[in-house]
Image 1: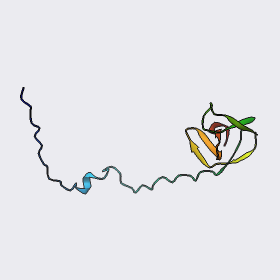
Image 2: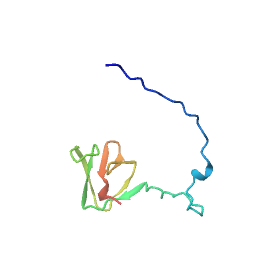
Image 3: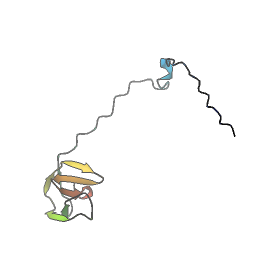
Image 4: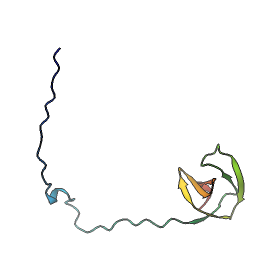
Length: 95
């Protein structure tokens, strides 16, 4: 069986007309969405909240904090909030 050769054709690059790069029905200028600054401090809303050494329900509990306690937010990942070095809480229980 003979191998078939792939034919590649070079196509010259052309500039795209400006009318094809804008949405024609948009008549007014749209301002970019401004994200609200993230809170750097949140409050525990659960009766008691386990602090874990990693962002996982299977991670070791290193402390428990009470309702109303303020925590400093250092980062967030997959529904968890980091409040210290190897200290994570489940984000649903703080606001």
